[in-house]
Length: 134
Image (cartoon, rainbow, N blue to C red; front, side, top):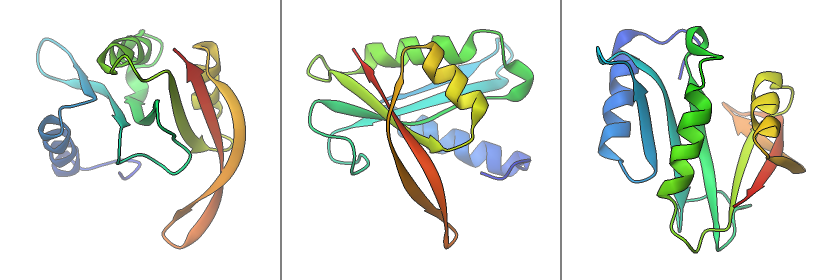
């Protein structure tokens, strides 16, 4: 998604998330304003570093104007309750240098276990892989 997405991009992403409801949570205000979302996956559609008995925290996003309100924590905690009982670990990959993401994850018990690279538009970027034991 663009750094400053258009209303149409936000709406299209929102609709896609609503359709793929397994492992997806959307945080919205009483008036329907979306403040963030979480996307967990397990089974066949995970990253290569996610093994059997593990889930992939593919995306967690909270609008910057809503940071510090507990929305990300609530999304993560509720998301973990969606996982089947045979999932014992959650892994995620984030761009290296993402200090907000690093701080959020580490303060919630995730530990960095390795580094990797991720290709975006033909360019390679260093990443950090984190794990959380359930």
